[in-house]
Amino acid sequence: MLEKADLGFLRQALEKLDEGFAALPEDSRTPADAKRLVEVLTAAAERLQDNYPYFHPLYAGQMIKPPHPVARLAYALAQWINPNNHALDGGRASSAMEKEAVAGLAEMFGWKEHLGHLTSGGTMANLEALWVAGQLTPGKTIVANEQAHYTHHRISGVLQMPFESIPCDERARMDVRALEARLVKGDVGTVVVTMGTTATGSVDPLAEILALKEKYGFRVHCDAAYGGYFGLAGNLADDTRHAFDHIGDADSVVIDPHKHGLQPYGCGCVLFRDASVGRLYKHDSPYTYFSSKEMHLGEISLECSRPGAAAVALWATQMLLPLVQGGEFARGLEKCREAAAEFHRRIANDTRFLAAFVPELDIVIFAPSAASVSASSALSRQIFEAAAKHDLHLAVAELPVRFFRMPEGMKQDRASLTCLRSVLMKPEHVEWVARIWEILAESTDEVLGKTI
Image 1: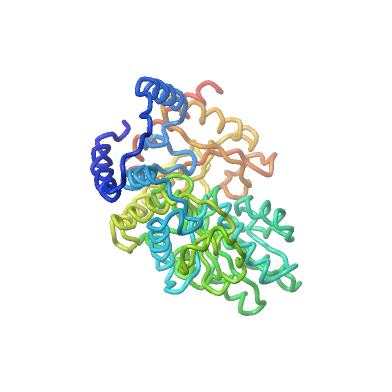
Image 2: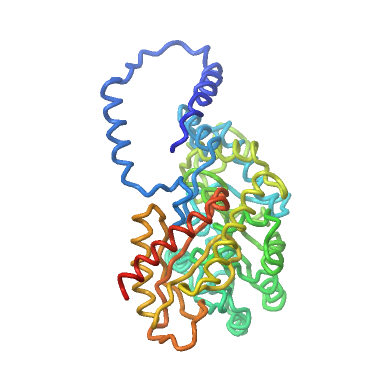
């Protein structure tokens, strides 16, 4: 099942890389003990078998998308150099590639001028965005959708900045009326707008929030770690499309190429519309930045050492699959949306299940029908386990009851429901929906038959 044929391409690329260092004298490095090396690698392969098959379409659980072959190969290629993109001394070529790749991400949001760099992931990227916000609006409160990623609350604590959650509506999007009621107090410095929540893929109403910015004055930070690339998709609902069309009006944006950007972990990115915020990063490092008058990426980053290989992989992927509407990359996102819509349609038309709202991106949440919320929650876990025995891997989430269409007479003995969650983030999921549904239906019947 694992792709192996492309290893030959890596050898070709390594030979080309080796040509650049042909003039160096031979060193006396002792070659690795081949027998022992194979033994250890084989042992590692055996240990790695203890994993869910994240690469397979029947894995539809958490947000784990296999990297594109070109990203995997480019990352491996760079490991023979092992560049560090903190300073140009450690990674001249990979630093230039990072700047080009990040500019491509910024252009996706309509930004020709920007400041940005890659990070180890969305958490670090969001930390930098909120750190900058705190420097510009000291002492003011950060607010986010109650369904936003927990990292914002935790980061605010690390930065010692006040944080509050804003209630969401029945589609898990930030409630704009609740937000305005909070804004009238006058002490909100930053509103975090989530462009694709982790649990449901819901998109906050960015345009309406930007209108409130004009009235109350605050920074807008878009956490587009999961959903940011979907602005390229041509099959979004109108209100979702409207939100994505305004990302370029935000003050800062975070996007994770290691999610829908087809990259290995970890690869996040933070972008600022106003490049002058770079002054906030100013620091002295007499032993690091002496080799070039050009900007070193470490001068605009809170992180120090960062893998240049991540930049090489992202650059190569964007060269092969340009970030343009209507292109191959965008069509892949559209297939994910199509798969989620079809899976939701089947659930909504089956009385065995409780459907939630129509998915905005590619995440579907649902639960089994039962006499009570508690009973439905128990069945969710049983179906999750039964499906896994048939090689269908879903996820379990705890979400508010009001997100679901509750039938008349169902006892709501809990405020939250343990539900099933499916992330259909592989383009090939659109061809596998029927098989996924078949296994889900069979597993559900097995569970329901045992409980009757």
